[in-house]
Length: 60
Figure 1: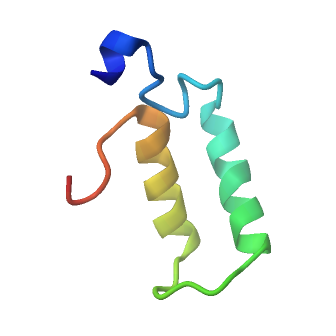
Figure 2: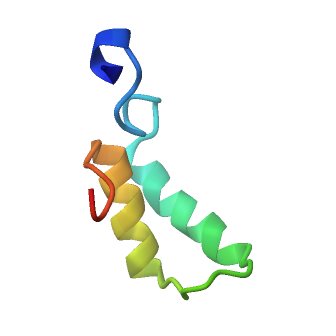
Figure 3: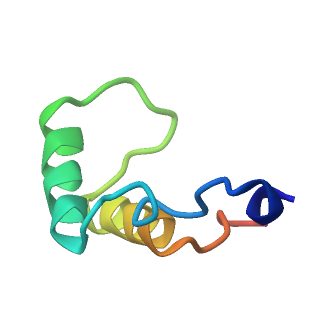
């Protein structure tokens, strides 16, 4: 349905570049907040790269 409506599927569709993913990881690690699970740079990069590529979320 999202495709039919023209809703962006990925962060790349919104204009983010692959280089922006690394910058986003740096920003997120520089501003920590309470989270039930700790996240490493590798974890964040994997999640953001998947979102950049338009891959479905984990478990879905």
